[in-house]
Amino acid sequence: MSHDIRMQQLEALVLASAADSTEDGRGLTIQAPAVGVLAGTPRVGEIVVGGSRIGRMRTAGLVRPLVVPAGTSGRVARRLARNLREPVEYGQPILELVPVAESEVGVDVEGGAQATVDGLPEGCFAITSPTHGMFYRRPSPDAPSYVSVGDVVEAGATVALVEVMKCFSAISYGTAGQPPRAEVVEVRVEDGIEVEAEQVLFVLRPA
Image (cartoon, rainbow, N blue to C red):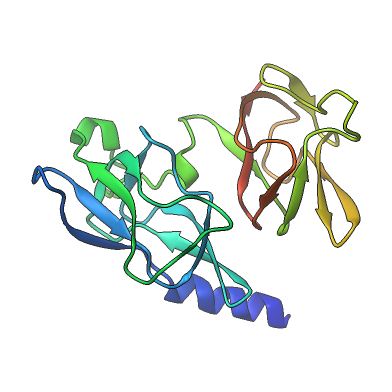
């Protein structure tokens, strides 16, 4: 219960901030809102809009979501800070955005910009890490990956493992609201990499 309360407070407090325009006068820079370690920030070419989540930041042992400021949108032109392990400072630039046409951003039914979680392609959804830990795509170093791009998975299928303090837990496909079968269209994390809670691991679409 205390964990849920703390996460609600963090959700309400942490926002990404927009800096002044870039050197050519056409873009914006997204800055770190606190001191911490980044995870799950969007890749070059992805579109971000106001209100959408662009990743997470671990600070003081807690994972905090990063949200694009209202009224800000653009395509990621450069990543100015690396994900994981390397801490960033308050106000340090982390993403450089360039403008995109309104037709690329899109408008939802309430007239606001579409909030694309972690830059997922249209019609796709994600499997995320349930916790901070080490991510493994295979049951052992000499075994094949549980799933690869192009594979179709069904509810209950193991897609990866996450290790926390030498304890391995299976990450399975299939939660409420997801289709019974789905195709893996993207793997966003390499084998043996440290991941954060709620970090996108796999991108899928209904099969």
